[in-house]
Length: 111
Length: 109
Image (tube, rainbow over all chains, first blue to last red; front, side, top):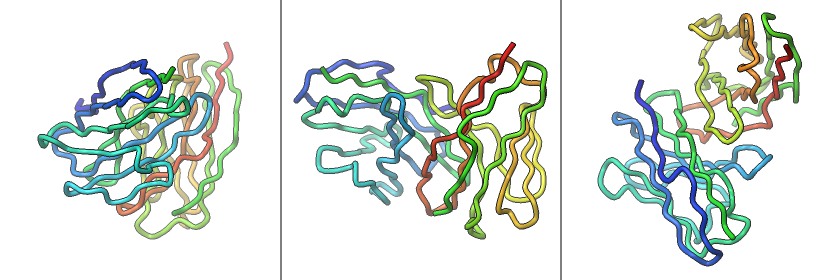
């Protein structure tokens, strides 16, 4: 069964450092998403991406964040100058039709 | 975006059938109803999706009445490993998926 894969599964970074989270969406999917989940809280939408551009973003997705599809297969989330409150699980997702499939997440801890 | 309402938590026993109902009164014509399961520190896992009437797969059934203002996820003969958070999501192709708080299902031995 095809799946969305994410790397790294865990990352610890120092406050102020830049982090890149990587995702390989399901191969024939055209819509890509990033979500995050702070420990004990609900899953929050960050950004959606279609046709090589951002189609929608939440208020969380400020200038600190950026997304890119550098090579037609990977979909990355870059977090610049990380803050303690960026510690969370980050989920990548992709969709072709009316169903979104999520990856297993990247657990980011900012210290 | 259609808002969903579902119970915050439910308890059941192993071997029982569990039904979780979700309300989505302002569902739009092009919205699909999708249920996800999430275990701690894992990504939401697709369970089942439907538009109207009844859908069944190897893990669950989804019942949707004619007015589509609610839906019921049915899990037959649950086991301890079904303890998880279950999300009801209503989504149209051009919308972003917005997660609610989900239903924390706790299966007891």
